[in-house]
Image (tube, rainbow, N blue to C red):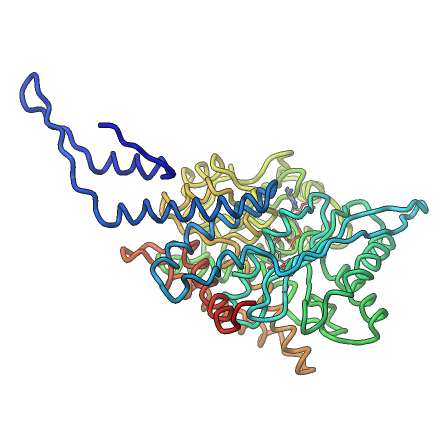
Length: 494
Ligand SMILES: NC(=O)C1=CN([C@@H]2O[C@H](COP(=O)(O)OP(=O)(O)OC[C@H]3O[C@@H](n4cnc5c(N)ncnc54)[C@H](OP(=O)(O)O)[C@@H]3O)[C@@H](O)[C@H]2O)C=CC1
Ligand SMILES: O=C(O)CCC(=O)C(=O)O
């Protein structure tokens, strides 16, 4: 039998052959070859995969050399296009085609002077991706790897994530290829001021409200806010993650890590489990990792690893509150390396140049950066008995790793759902700024818990397969899409 396949994914054809052909021995000489009639769904899947392939082909043509952006778009297309095909309301309006096209990309020169008096030049960006449901909202990343592809993937993800929070925030992201490592405090300030001098022309409390991300924490947000105020002569909630004394929200620093753990907790509950007594592996040692570690520990988990780009530490006894305070001192005060941990706690070990996924655990929280967990590492996690992966970082698992998790039917939450607590609390900071009020930690944390629970429910609503398994990737993408798409439909062709 020859199966001709044009433009159809080969795995679909292979799937057909596996499921539809059967062989029976009739006599010593003859075999009967039987074939089942293909189901309606089979042909639907072929047509669907053709529309996904065609869509991705067009997007790839317009976005050459942007692998991270294409990776993020592919994941959304594979789950949202079938949904669109089943819902005529979303057809014929080029909604997804519009969503992958940033409303605006701003790219600019950032010139500043280092401590030696030498002039330095960096490249700054702001991607204003989608404003259908509110002002552009999303962090600023300072890291040497920053480029258009990475920021577009982040801005695209942000649009869906912000929609999931149910708060009125569009999607955006920005940053610069500036490396904060090894820079003095005054150099950081000069860079932030130079960066904001241009960025201030494009943002505003009702237009675009940036915040922190990798390499940008409370210190950098403060310097950027000060420069914005100086240039514009206005005190507005133009950035979130501000210091508490000038309009910041309590719990915003904790929110992404806490939210990640709250989301994981909701997932675990669907299987009658919790953090209590579980071994947890965390990657990263920055903002998200620190507070994920804190909350997982408070809920009874034992976090045994943290990492940075130089390697990971393994502390079999667990990183308790006192040890975490030391990590915070290393990272937030000394801007040092995670390897310093073993100087104070020599019973722990530092594993240089490796990632922590080889450590046996029940729960994994990737909280460092994109594509930090690959297929082989995913297989190791599953083989070691890991039952839950909740992404604190944005897109930390490669697509192949995600396939390993979903095939193994373990609990897997994509970052756009599980790390949405950070931007959700930024949304709460915007509300407090508009009201000129400050809520207590308990009030903000309670709202955060409700938001994370609601995101979990939205994922279950759109991601359940009817047999008890929840595909949180599908659920998050469709739930995120629906709100943005409805708003775009309501606003006409813009
Ligand atoms: N901050 C927030 O509110 C939110 C953050 N996120 C996402 O969470 C992740 C972490 O952000 P955040 O904690 O804020 O950032 P931080 O800058 O505070 O910390 C980043 C951590 O990740 C590590 N890291 C960065 N790049 C790499 C790399 N290429 N390889 C290995 N480790 C790396 C850093 O190590 P080193 O110091 O050695 O570079 C550091 O430990 C990012 O994906 C971010 O987009 C998502 C939602 C909100
Ligand atoms: O709080 C914000 O606006 C930024 C959050 C962010 O960058 C993210 O969710 O990835």
